[in-house]
Length: 261
Image (cartoon, rainbow, N blue to C red; front, side, top):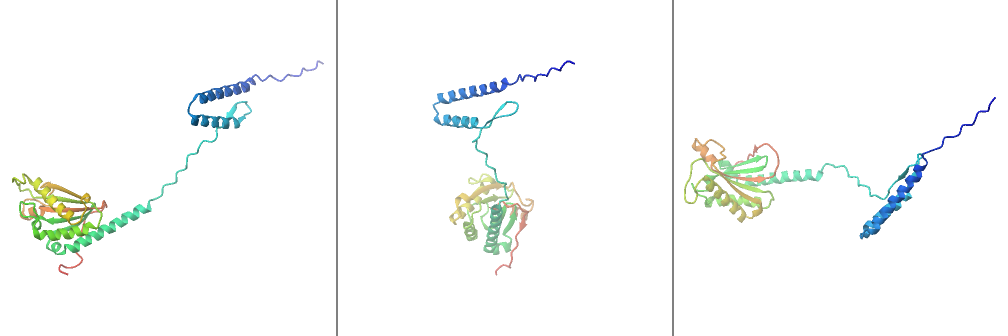
């Protein structure tokens, strides 16, 4: 019986890939080094040199013969901490609300007689506190010069506002009766000049000019209808807005104690 011939192990035709891969790696390294040497930037050369050194120190081979280069030394991105609620911001808002409440109470106390007469109203709005002053106690008809009797009331408001840091907007409003004089061609000019007169008095009373703004709206923002005398009297006013940017529904502030006490 014929002896079986021993089968020869098949020849591995892919062994040349290992040498080829090594050759390509060395060729790549050669060109990188040539580029680094030709560069006049010494810093870049050092970076490339360190990268190549780290790469060749970490060359390993898989069973298939393919080289793997692991480049180390790259800086890791710092992990950003998880954002937490800003407790300081909430505390600051609470302090601002308390400061605004104190300002409103001080103004209410200073203007108590006028509030009792209905000449002054304090409103708490989404933007802060608004002081509405009827123009009958501030200006003569058709004029923008403050009456002497109103100066003391406005200075009392200025004294309260001077020690705060809230922005203040002074708005002038008129009824719909037109005016046409050399000084005031329309209600726009009259309302703007009245607001400016109050602004100047506040500034003289210690309120910083950078916190003050004057606006004239004329008859464009009435509170009531202009068909009655009472409505027209209500629409002729100066509004002083103490801005706190606090979103709340308007609530009228009431006096805690009777007038004269």
